[in-house]
Image (cartoon, rainbow, N blue to C red):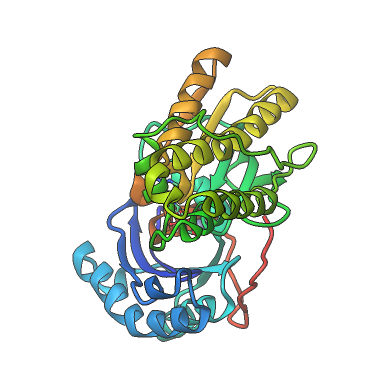
Length: 334
Ligand code: KG4
Ligand code: ZN
């Protein structure tokens, strides 16, 4: 039997709920939190409070727009981790309450596995084994997906996520949060060879973005000493040059992972997957190296409950459920 499942995502700053029926995602309701904008980043305590305010509305909306009754549900799924503990707690507690009230099982989902499984929401779907570069404000990983529920992390960041590097660099230039999309926008108008930034990646398949962030800070400090209006005058070129280097640091590792494993099925996920420079470089590498690439629709790249629902579907089929005393794990590994 293919189940009907309600899934909840609350790991960071999106409150989301989705219904999956017969293996097909029916909807993907997302409430984004604007409360963080003025602080230049996600404030964990404010995120938990906003989840508490949004969750009932979001879940209700997902049920109403799917046309199902609560009694049609076979399980409630939720994100167990990784994420902000307070935010995760809101989703976990809500899911437990609902499962208990309806007398149906709970399914806990690993947020990072779900990002990879987002590629199965809509065709074209990747063929196993494939590599997935998951890049967002909180994560930078290369995952080897051998099967729906069999994955291993081949490499990840040892410090900042690449989205965080985009956002912090944007903040240094006085751009609002989240700055990644703005750097992308200005980069498309600039010269990517105007300035050079050091490659601060680690050996092997590990990433590191804290070094380039610091060198960017000193670069701006020195240039602004010479000309206080340096950023305004050269914004497009600065963004293009920085984006070029960040994307290069990502693609280099994907090429290395592909060589190491012999896998040429390459997927990307996470908010930074929207970046035009990354998409272009991925396409160029695909042509050069004979890769088949997969980029999900943007609503399934950023944090969303549809990917949690998809992961829960595969777990339900395998009969993998959670106990009622399950608790969230902030640094949950794949
Ligand atoms: O997956 P996501 O919505 O949330 C998590 O962080 O989990 O990713 C958000 C991140 C932010 O850092 C944002 O700046 C970045 O994705 N982002 C981009 C672009 N669109 C979103 N970074 C670079 N270029 C973009 N076009
Ligand atoms: Zn995420």
